[in-house]
Structure formats: C-alpha cells, structure tokens
Image 1 (spheres, helix red, strand yellow):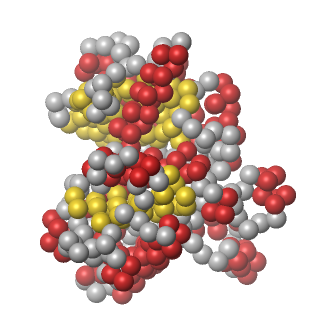
Image 2: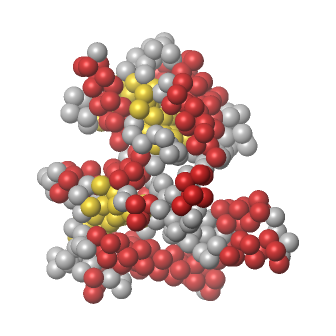
Image 3: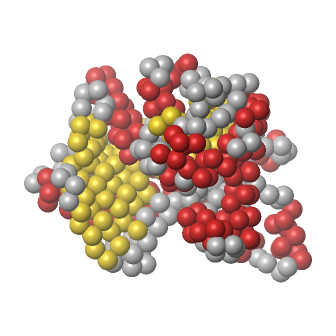
Length: 404
C-alpha cells in the first residue's frame, strides 16, 4: 500500500510517499521532500524515486500551502491525479489527554487535537490546519493521526504525575505526557528486530539527541519514563531549550528582572541550552568547533550537555533495575562519535563500555558501538519516523478494512 506521510515542525514540513511491501518494509520511496523556514523565505528540496534532487529558494507561505505543493509535485512525478495513496498519516506533537493511540481523523478527533493546542501552541494548530487542507485536496484516503505522546501513555502514575495538588493537576490536566514517542518507539522496535526478539522482551534506554533531546526508559517494550513532560521543555539540555531547572528561576526573573512571563518562556525555549551557555550557536557542530578553538563557554556547554544525558542514563538504569542496551538516535546521537564517547566515558561502573574504533566508524548508520566486554550493549539506530508512521497507518487501515 502507498502511504503519504506528513511530518510538521514549527517552521518546517517533511513529506514522504512510501510504497510499503506486504511485510511493512519500505518497498520504495516514490517521492519525498522538506520545506524549511516556512513563511520566512527558506527553501524546499524534493527528491524523486530515482534520487534526483530538485531544490528551490523561497518556500510556501504556510504549512497547508506547503503540503498542497508537495501533493501537486508528487502527482506530477507519479502521473497520478489524484494520488493513489491508500492512507495519509500526520505526525502530531501533542495528542492531549483524550487521544492515546493512533486513530482515523474525524470531527471528534480534530476537536481533541485543537483542544490539545493549549499544550503545544506552536505545533498543533499548524498540524491541524495541514490535516484539514490535505483532507480537502485528497478526500478519499483515510487520514491517520500519530502523536508523539502516544508511546508514553504506558508510564505508571509515579512517573507520569507531578507533585502538585491533585485538584489543580486534575482540573488542568497537568501531567507528564512525554514527546519524541515516534522516535523512541522506532528505536525500540528496530532493536528488537536486530536481536530477533519480541518487543515485550526488550528493556532499553533510548536517547533521541538532536535539536530537541529526550531519554526514554523502556521496560518490556513499553515506555515507563521519559525526560520531557507537560511540554518539550522539561528534561535534557537541548539546542536552545534549558531543560530541567529550578522553577523559581521563572518567578525570580519576572519579579526581580522585570521580564514578562512570555519573555521568560521565550528565553527558556529559544535562548538557552547549547546556544545560551556557549553564546555561539545551538548547533552542536558549531559549538564543538568553537570549543576546539579555545572558547571556554562552548567547552562548558558541551560538558553540561553530556553530563545531563549521563545523569538521566543513571537514573533510568535505577528505575528499570537493569537494561539490555543503550540506543542512540537523532542528529547528534547518530553523527557525533565524540558526544557518544563523552556521555559513556563515566558509565563503566554501570556496565557500559564503548569500543573506540566501532564508535568512531559509526556515523549516520546503524551499528553496535560497545566493547565486547560491555554488560550493556550500545547501539546507534538512525530514526525513520516516516516509515514508522507509514507502518502504523498501514496496520490501522488494514484492520479497519478487514472488520468492515
């Protein structure tokens, strides 16, 4: 079955038209692409099934326009008008308290996604607008919703709840939802496949390290804790997000520095993390280059980044009791051997030991990077969110067709 995937970011959109074989493998990619800096000039890149790239500067005015432009291009290269996709699947950042599993979009589902926009105001409205526009353009294929929060619905109460008054937390649905669930689920399922094991037999700590960063503790194939919470701000230090901090810092800045609440949120989300500490950039590659040239703040930013990941690994090993492996994914996790080495350097007492040569040679590809004597295996597993979502849509739509 052909599945059309849309993955909306706050200022970007990725699309992928995938032809799945009967076993759920990527038979071939018919066409894919990315729009960047939507509404602000930016650029777009389309790649057809033969691998030929088509790039252009300037991009769509908004996310729905970008999705419609993608569909027009796909119809051109496949000679199908309309497309023959059997399903369309949309990544949503926040499913909110009411949506917990992948589902076919209808009026009630869309309403729940709009209500969840209170938790993800930069993402959900864009995704819902794109969903509506695509549905009008291609009304026949069912639209499937896969949210980043779904994988973390299995967290137990002690991991999910905040230590807030119960009436207050209940009234406003204040709890830890978790994010990057699609990426963590992909790493778990791929690791299980590599080990020829059922997901229910897998205990892992998965590390999604990119511009946004999160850690997930997985027991018997299910998320039991994750570092992000009500919003993607909680947890690890990231490119521009602060991650964990004393919440009194926010009120301190409001009361003593004359900073507005909205400005505090902007600082914590867009001016902190690697960017804030280094003063150079939120891009780890740029920070690493600055550190090598002697920039002490950049060097501190790198040490802080790795230290905080290491702390979470230790905490999640304690929460799990034990694990089979650590799995690195995301742009940093897949490409930075130096960061992986720094994170794991102090973990030998916990059973983690890297093989320096394997680690150095594993760049943007799948591979085992732990030493032979390491009690916990360490893997790099590149994340394919689009293929994961396509498989989910294929299973859901196939099951509905069988039952009808």
